[in-house]
Each structure stands twice: as C-alpha cells, then as structure tokens.
Image (cartoon, one colour):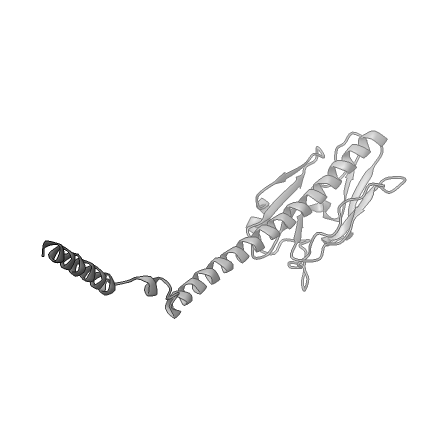
Length: 212
C-alpha cells in the first residue's frame, strides 16, 4: 500500500509539472514579430536627415578644396615668376588671358622661353582682383615688383571658403585663409570674375601650372 501511495504521489507531481509548463507564458512569438510601420518610418526619417547633413558637409568640403587648390595655383606661379626673374636677372611678367578675369587663366612669360600657364577654371570658383596690377604683375631681376601691386581673392559662392593672395612692392606673395580687406568693404570689387557680369562668374580648377 505504501508503494502504491508513493507512485500515486509521483504521478500527481508529474501531472502538475506538465500542466504548469503548458500554462506558462512564452515570449517566442513576441521576439519574432519584427518592426512596426511607425518604427520603420522613424528609422527612414533619421537616415534621411543624416544623408542630407552628410551631403551638405561634403559639398562645403569639396568647394573649400577647390578654392585652396586654385589659390595655390596662383601662389605657385607668383613664386615661380619671382625666382625666375632673380635667376635670369630680367623682367618676368604674370598676366591673365582676360585682363578683367583671372579665373580664365594666366601665363608667366620672360624674354624666352615662356615659363608656363594656367588654364581656365570651370565651376564655382571666383577670382576678384584689387589694385593697379590686376592687368599683370612684373618682377625685376631683384625679385621686386617693377610696377603696381595687386590683391586677389579666391572664393566659392554659397560657402565660407575663401583665400586672399597679396603681392606688395617687395614682390613676396602671401596667402591667407581669410577674405581680403578690400573685398570685405565692397560687394562689387573691380576686376571681379563674372559669368553674367564683372562680379560673378563661377569657375573651377582645371590644370596646374606647367613649367616648360
């Protein structure tokens, strides 16, 4: 009788255990339900905002690089002309192909041969020149300017990218990561590059100065 009682107790415990397991809640269905439409819309919205911010940043960065490269092109030509004038002990001239628009390219010349040239820019790069030397700069055999000086600002519309290149009477060219003082005071400086007028012409970097 004791053995029968013990087996009956074990049978009841096993039955109760199975019942409790069958009635226990499960989270398997909830974990596999996926995303709701609202959650997907939130994720897509966040991704769209991040994409727009990234595109704006890349556009500003690219414009800044083009402005820097264009200013380095002009600065390099000025250094080349100055050093060649001292080496040759003769006049070396840098002049734009278009006297009112440095963005259409320039060339450096001596008695012979030609020193090199910069091709025209096409894009969103603007040059603005202030000074009597905007039509051309000349270096003498001492490396000093044999004529009027000039200040050239290189910029890109719609972005803060700007470089200022100055050449004083000592002949030494300098570049600064800032707007030229004359351009800060005037919205329409003389000799400014322009696509439809003398103040505005989007231009871009094409080729670097080629020494011959």
